[in-house]
Image 1 (spheres, rainbow, N blue to C red):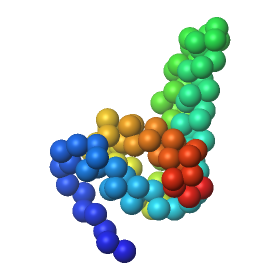
Image 2: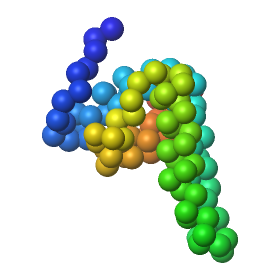
Image 3: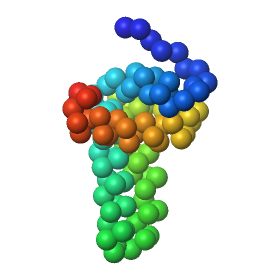
Length: 105
């Protein structure tokens, strides 16, 4: 397998292949998927009238599932620490790519 080395990426397009490489374990990807799904569910619930206090759960839900996936199953350090904005975008793009079956479940 051709391994992409971590570098200072100039664009999200350069970063996303690295991001996918760091999510090779199916359980890690699934945990990311569910974390992102729950984040979207909370945001929709708040928009729909639920208490805005639920927004405090967003980082716990989003990062909690993802970090368990990385530390327990992937056995790597989340890219969030070095590339927080690209990683956040990567979560949503990977979520979409799983939904449209561009990436294996």
